[in-house]
View 1 (cartoon, rainbow, N blue to C red):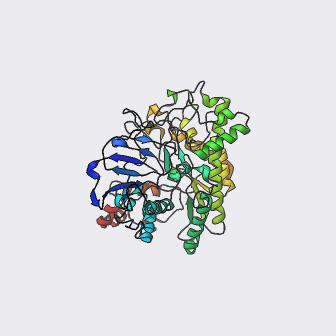
View 2 (cartoon, rainbow, N blue to C red):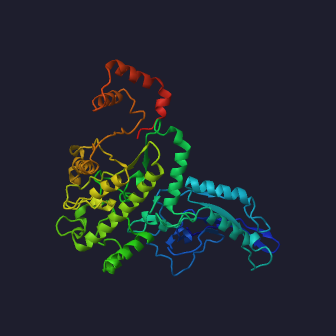
View 3 (cartoon, one colour):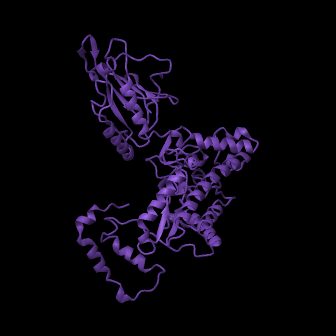
Length: 483
């Protein structure tokens, strides 16, 4: 939730009601995203452990005095992970003169719709004349308290259910894997909700299974991949990615780390993640943890932390793949899951981009065998991105090797499954450029050279005919978005 107090006399409406000054203060409820900050005179303070939060546009512009406010040089202005925050104003008459909520059912439905849309919060005018209606100094907040409760019930999710990095910023695109089996969604666990989603999908599309629908890909994390959101803050001024950050600082992940460290007899190891690890855009040698020689990753503590961090990711993947495998076990479809290709810094000993993503794969340790075994155990197929990447097209400074990494994963998968390492290829993605005369002939040539069942030449349309037919509908073609 966010509390902002902005002094501005220009935002106040003052009128006389009997002997009582009547005005309003706008309250911005941020229960959709529960953060806290106070903004006196547009300066900002963040209170992490606050209760209710709102925004007041006060009548006077005098500063608010508090020992908890920051100095002028403080950089505690609220940050939004997705850029500009969006609020929607509630009706001006949301609370009536009798201190009851007007349009209660309509407002409740609207709040649910805004929540689903991803709106950050709502803003509400609070009328002084309603709150202090009976006599001066006697305040009745009952109507606004009811409305605040409605906003809370619209879907107040605790920030601790999302992954957090070392600075405390939360990644809100997916839930922390540490809450997989915690009832944080209206009394249900995320795994239970996901299972209901899968069952609903199966029920709705069952008549298409085996014909139109031959496979189902299960989302396992950010962008559907089995990984932590370790590269969510990347610099735009360079094409060389940093090592990323460990995502173990939300409350639930820290609790798991604490339990693991205490069970191992080293409680101090469970206080937080590695203190000497770099930040998102830094290179491996910028701090001690990922250095090739003498790095903390190659110490007993490093082995403890990385083993725990990767095992939590594997457990998460196992839960979701097991769920999906069970849900679709009696159908003729194949279940897939996507593995990321964290190939930057692969030529170093530590492989830091893989470590922050949750794969304990180093020059001296194979981190993908357990992953392949997990997929095989659940009878699921692995999807590997980046089949088109080559080492020669990577920045030399990034010490990247997508070819070596792909080869490692494919060999492990083949050895475990006993089958061909590649049995399906998906080309990403249809769009205007894909069907253009410059590109589509190349794609046609690529398809014809794949190792597929031989087709008679009479069954194949001429290349020129295919391109021409695709380009005829230029209006439809222009609306396609290239990936």
